[in-house]
Image 1 (cartoon, rainbow, N blue to C red):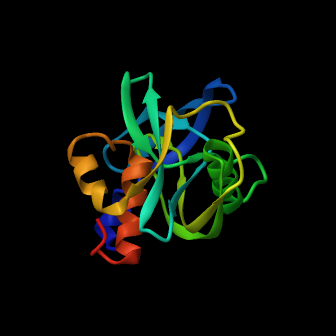
Image 2: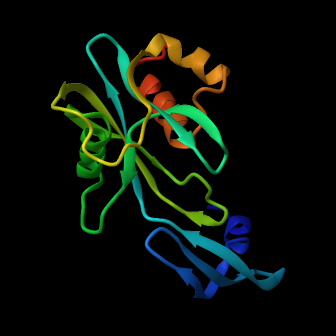
Amino acid sequence: MTEDAERTRWVVHGERLVYDNRWIRLGLADVEIPGVERFEHHVVHLDRAAIAVVLDEQDRVLMMWRHRFVFDRWGWELPGGLIEAGEDALATAAREVEEETGYRPKEIEPLVTYQPMAGMVDSEHCLFLARGAEFVGEPTGEIEADLIRWVPMAEIPQMIAQGDIWTSGTLIGLYAARERLGSGRG
């Protein structure tokens, strides 16, 4: 790290909670950019999430067709959900796959962890790669998808180009899985 980089490191003098419920916590952070100014900055805190890229032996990925009311938009997504307090992220990913799709992942490993909006939102996303899955029954959670389908990896680039895949967790998960497995896929 250079001396210049250290001079631009923001100093956090504190944070006060403005709003808090099960899904979201909104704070106002008292921050200072050294040599510039001190001001309040909104900070959104969300629970951590776990998402899984589940691939079968035929090089297909398990996906769900979902409607997102905030944008009034449909799209294909990977299964995933919020990590419960005290729960391991890998266990969450496996649980969410089974609850949302009815499939139980066989082998599952960490893929990548990222923050989707690092400027003002704390919402760590942990992505996992599962190889193989066994159908164990109908989804048990609330209805989260209108359609569950095994999509050939070769179709993924076209689905992205058409705008049928557009959420950050799904995009990053698919790109990271492709990179891990070799770029010759999809």
